[in-house]
Length: 104
Image (cartoon, rainbow, N blue to C red; front, top):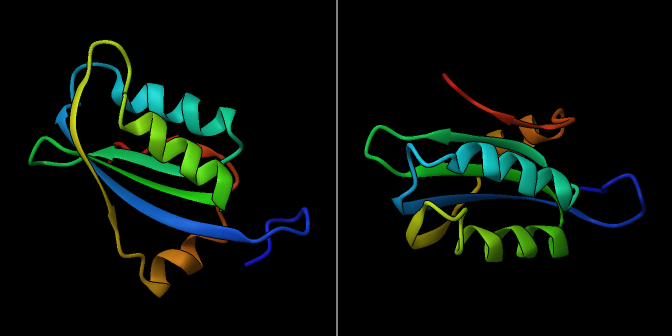
């Protein structure tokens, strides 16, 4: 998928575990992703983890993954796992135009 600048756009999904809820992690992720030029969403999961779905250039996605491993100051990230991305998410990501917090 092209990214609009002639480069390739990838879609990735990450699961972030540790103390990542109740510490501003979603807000920090939204700002961090937007700062590196990604579109997508972040949401809390019922098991206490956070899920991040992002689309953009591979280098920006790599930068986001590195930052997710650190998290914001109050967080304590114990694990970041890159998950498989299915075709349905790839299709949906084509319509993303910003990075949002999914509260649903």
